[in-house]
Amino acid sequence: MRVMLTGATGFIGGHVLRALVDAGHEPLALVRSAEKLGQLRALHDIGAEVAHVVGDMTDAEAVAAAMEGCDACIHTAAFTSLDPEQMHVALEVNAPGAINVLDAAAAAGCDPIVHLSTMSVIFPPSGDVLSGDDPVQGGGNPYNASKAIAEEHARGMQAAGQPVQILYPAGVTGPTDLGLNVLAANLIPTLQSEIMMSLASGGWLLVDVRDLASAMVGLLTPGRGPQRYVAGGTYMDWGDFHAVVTEVTGCDRALFPTPRDALEQMVDAEAVEIMLGIVPGDDAGLLADSGVGAWRPVEETLHDTVSWLVAGGLLAPDRAPNCA
Image: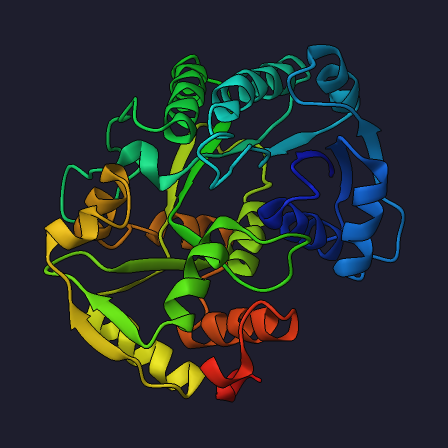
């Protein structure tokens, strides 16, 4: 199957590109830099050339050119940043880009059209698990707002019968990235510290990027129609997460009860609500339809992630002796 892929040089998209090649598909990547695509191929040991179109997803003509002759589309591209002065770019890029890609894929007759959304657009959940049936939660910081706009468009296409399959991943982590993805950047301070937070509710919800990529590629079966899938991964409360990190790293950090008001001094209000309100995801539909079956053990995910951080000089070896 010839598959148009956006975000191929990003963290998730790079793993999707690897999974597409491994599955025998023919990817066509829309990239802003052919040089960066070459770096990504080297990073993931993709020996074969990858067909590509140089352009931006906000350029409708470049998107249409990349879509020519494609049977399916996977849209993973999005602008993310931890820099408050750069966050506004998300609104300028993510929603317009997603609309361009989804509309062009529909016009080209792609089936399926796989759209990578985010857990934040369906948070807080309506029940005790995250569900693809939960309503869209708009607004919030620029990234969340931009993804919510794209989400509304994707759901509108589904209502019109287009074969759009929407995925809602939680905390995507794992090794191998050209840069430093947001979750890894947030994980580093936790691992560098002598203490770990313990909150009254919530916890961590982690999905391995390699499993997520395999699941997205596994959905490339035409005729399934509109679908929504949660990709939550493994849920851990604060005590569970502390135990896993201790086992994986070989370094025991003190578990420190942290009241809400102290947490609010460290992270923004939306992050506080997610940290305190996170619940498991209803992943059964995605695991079944993609053929993945089950997520790998979170211990493996964290070991590989931390080992990659140590090897890259991003985390001191003494903070994770088992991974050095």
